[in-house]
Length: 425
Ligand SMILES: Cc1cc2nc3c(=O)[nH]c(=O)nc-3n(C[C@H](O)[C@H](O)[C@H](O)COP(=O)(O)O)c2cc1C
Ligand code: SF4
Image (cartoon, rainbow, N blue to C red; front, side, top):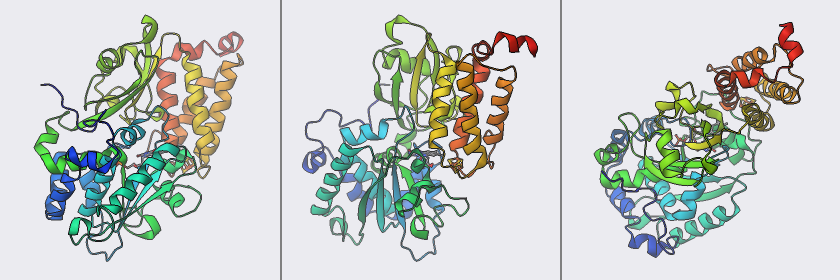
């Protein structure tokens, strides 16, 4: 059956950022429908649809919403994660570029379902253009009664505030984001308490990714079964895949969850450029690890990459590396990023990533020592690969990248250990 685009359905429609044009395409009809429906039924529909978070962890959206304490007097907050700083990830920015009202409708419908009083959209600091677009979109919505008091003459009111980040990757981690929103340094919080119980300004807070929220209005309009008809049993619905690196046609494509990595590269990204062979693929942002060219049958859904030793699907930001890529350099670049972005609260992450970087630089400089690979793997174990070693997941990203690159391309790393040392060990 031909796949009918959901999130990109308005791609290329002239002036779609204009409210009237968006409405002429059926925009805000889901909101009308939601406002006339009981909240528990709407939430149940989202739960039944199997919608999982598109920000990286793949947690079930409706289940997360259930964690909001039912007997709390409020106020309740929604914080929209539009930080999008994971290298290789550019899908949320794309959604804003092609259809900004779609994002806002997702925000308002989700806010209504969860009795939210104020929605904060936390947007990455470097997204100057998208911030202007969203601010304009919010202004139009206020003017037309889609935000503010008594939305569309209902008894539901919602304020919406756009908050610009200051450019730190760690502010994409949900509790780092809350700290930054509150005007503090973006240091992730120890959990529990989880944001649903004590989030922004100490109040119960829902946090969702932009793409997750964009899935909500179509689910409300077309139902859980329709959503489940796309994707796989445990990974339902459409997904935006961002493809970059050594391919002929980099960009964003929308497909049902579960497309095999090979098909994504060959059919949807025009294959590896210059007719070269693929050497490896990062399936979902650099934190997730790497797939070798023998693992390209991996389905890109929430279950696929872990079966091939990766952490998960992540953001589905797929980075393709051709046969000329030096995997030691690729890992060094990833670790350099994490070492730079570590907030420094946890010893394993702060010291471990810096230490790994030194070792990788040593290997690349021809000064590798006999025990360097074991040391790198030990450091990876010390800072991630198991929950609870650090406050947030940044260090897990460093660990998964290191472990999969070294184990899957071991001979390339071994070749960087100096001959003298290799004999000595
Ligand atoms: C270091 C780090 C960076 C993250 N960056 C982002 C980000 O830029 N955007 C995002 O949506 N989620 C990011 N996340 C995941 C969020 O913490 C959170 O799980 C997500 O926003 C929840 O939304 P979802 O359930 O809709 O996916 C990051 C997590 C970590 C550990
Ligand atoms: S794991 Fe790293 S980034 Fe996360 S809180 Fe600890 S030091 Fe900060």
